[in-house]
Length: 149
Image 1: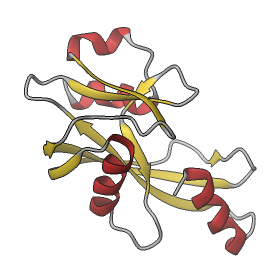
Image 2 (image 1 turned 120 degrees about the horizontal axis):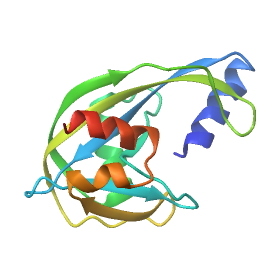
Image 3 (image 1 turned 180 degrees about the horizontal axis):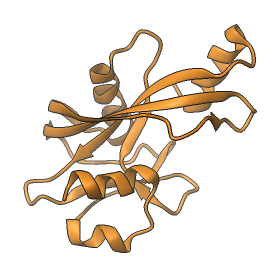
């Protein structure tokens, strides 16, 4: 489910009131310690694979689903490393308002070959940690700098 679809479905039920949304972010490294970064369709910044939980879905299940949907990788082991709270109230393109919480996971086991889905992600690449400060990064991309320090 896309982020906008999830928000629209929820706000169709609750009206214009702000909501709390939980999502996940995946810190995935290869055997050399290079970090997998994603570039979304129609975007020029790099960040982590991330997405929102569906109704009743646990963050762990969301992590596994989002990583597989967006990259075709199968997560076999992961651990929670941080829970990011909202810095401010966010707004979707249609005007729906929400507070976003993100459960960040370090993925310690996975298999497959990363392939962007072409719908949400245009590109996936492993980058050495030293290259990250020189890339145009999303907010989660910047957070990855601290998590990999």
